[in-house]
Amino acid sequence: DAGVIQSPRHEVTEMGQEVTLRCKPISGHDYLFWYRQTMMRGLELLIYFNNNVPIDDSGMPEDRFSAKMPNASFSTLKIQPSEPRDSAVYFCASSPYGTGKATEAFFGQGTRLTVV
Amino acid sequence: AQKVTQAQTEISVVEKEDVTLDCVYETRDTTYYLFWYKQPPSGELVFLIRRNSFDEQNEISGRYSWNFQKSTSSFNFTITASQVVDSAVYFCALSEARRGTYKYIFGTGTRLKVLA
Image 1 (cartoon, rainbow over the protein chains, first blue to last red):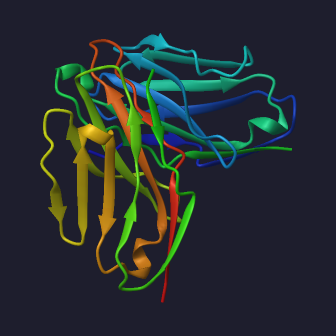
Image 2: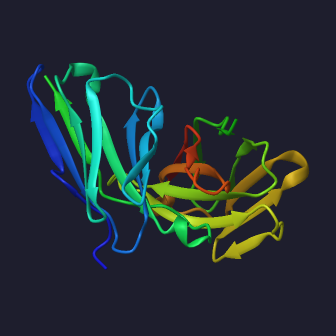
């Protein structure tokens, strides 16, 4: 398997623009997670899905952030409008947790977002 | 509520020294899972080990060893004879196992610098 695939790897955008980050989880994994990493706050869980359904979005910082998972093989994290303080590395991860056996989360390479 | 504390922000050692990274966790669940991840300078998150709450056996993998003690809610990680390639940020994570609410909570990480 190719692992969790995120795109783009790097994104530079101007304040106020819409940004969409994409993630393809590992096939067969029924949990998908979006994390944000910054120096100040470390790795924060933004939202996670189970079988394409959002389970907990309490980590989403503001209404400017939204996430969708239209099918088992694709998820997006959208920021509209973007602000400089959104600059961070955004990670997507997936896990086959739903099989009833706990396991580790597998992470993508991350998207480094810079909002200028 | 879940919480993971990595009190050591940064550690510097000279190559071949042993180093222990501390991790203390909080959870109200009796069933939970603990993890260690490595984040090298390239930025990806690499899984190192998983432990469940019912298995307090220490584990050794090459130069790496882990000490899990439920009595002190700690899951410490030791690198023996450290090498420059061990330089990275190391994260400890916790996941509770209540069905449908699986998520991974990370500590703030410990940056390890191994000097030649």
